[in-house]
Length: 290
Image (cartoon, rainbow, N blue to C red):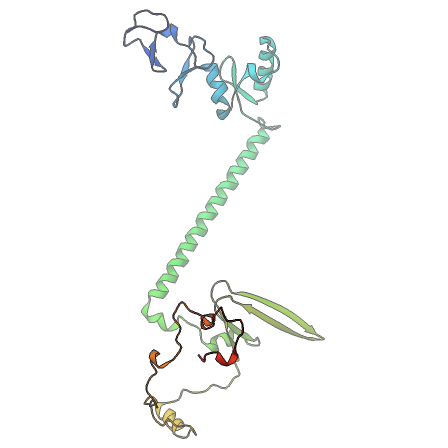
C-alpha cells in the first residue's frame, strides 16, 4: 500500500485511515487547518475526520466550557496571556486545561471563602429537608388512597357511602343548601345583591350541552312517607280521569298510496317544476293543489 501523501510504501498496521485513505503518521493533516497532526488528535464521530487539538477546541470546546486563549484574548503576547490566565486562575474563575486552553468555571464574589461553603452547606441542608418532607407527604397520600380503596371495597360499609338530605342539613343548620348537578364545563356565577340590611344571592349556571339540575334542600320541609301499592290503587280509583281502552285507534279509511295523488314530485323535483317557464302569464287558478 502506498501513502498518497509522500508516495512511500505503507504497511497495513501503520496506516491511519483519513477520508477513505491511509497515510503515514507524519503525513497526517488536520482536516480544518491542513497542518501536520504532530500533536494529540481527535476523530470526529460524524465525518470520520481527524482534527488537531486546537481545531477541535475551537469547534467543540465552547460546549464543554473550554476556551482557546489565543482566540479569546485581544492580545497575542505570550507573556501577557500568561499573566492574565494566572490572575483568573488565582481568583477561581478559570482552570487551565493545557498550555493554550482554559476552562471557564464561573464564580461570584466570595465563592472561595468560608461564607461560600456555609451557603452551600445551608442550601444542601434545605434541599435535604424538602426531599424528606416530600417523601413524608407522598407516603401520607399513599396511605389515604389505600384507606379510601379499602372503604369502597368493604361490603359492610356500602350502605354508608352516601349522604342523605338530613345529613347535609344537620351539618349546615341555618344555611340554605342548593345542590347543582351538571357536566364538565358547566360555569357558575354568584352575584351578591344587598338591599339595605338584607343580603341576597343570585346564582347563574350555564351549560352549552345539557341542562343543569338544581335542588333546594329544606330541613324543615314536611316529609312525605312512601305510598304503598294499595294506596296507589285507591288514589287512582278516586281520580276523575280513567283509562277507557289501551287498544290503538281504529283507522277510518285505507292508508293512502302514492298513486292516489294526481301530482307527485320526485326526490329531485321542487315546487318550481310545476310551472312552465315559457308561460309569461301566471294563472293562479291553474296552480295545482299539492
